[in-house]
Image 1 (cartoon, rainbow, N blue to C red):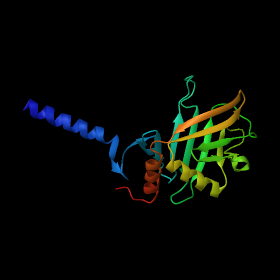
Image 2: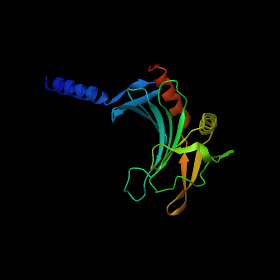
Image 3: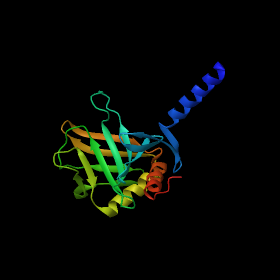
Image 4: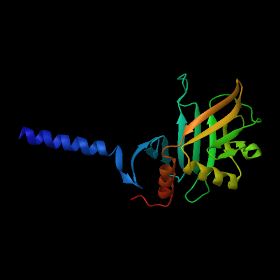
Amino acid sequence: MSRLLAATATAVLLLSAGAVQAADRCGAVTHMRFGETRAYFNDALAACRPDGYCSVVVALPDPSGQAAWRHQLRVARPSPGADYQVELAATDPMPVAGAMRFTTPGQTVDPGPWLVPTSPGSNEFRVSDPILTRSLVSGLRRQRIARWNYPSADGPAEAYFSLRGMTAALDWIDCRGAGDQT
């Protein structure tokens, strides 16, 4: 009887632990954190909020340990079916003006006037031109690495983003946005 009780208790614990990591949705094992459904695809984290905003983030750690990340590349859909947005963020203080360059193998882009701060005084920039955004997302899907060069308060800076998992993560947020969560 005690073995049966122990086996039942173990099964209940395993089932309740499964609630933390949900069943496969749109081809990925998901979990909930910060009120959003998340799935990892190699170096890319895909997440969707209940309001329909979905994003894929590649974050580079802060070597100093003062922040959770030092650089981020984010591709988002603010609502299901909306155009993609490409955003770049850094913890380094940086001027709004200055030469920034975004490179993947075979494609170098100087976003220039199409790279705008997401809010005044922020170190987060969004590509505002929809044609350029589509071109960048297409390049991110095909390549394995991307480089962002930008001016910081300490001089020229660069960040290298591994794109392993980017295509699968983008496919996942598109699937989630389409409502197909099987």
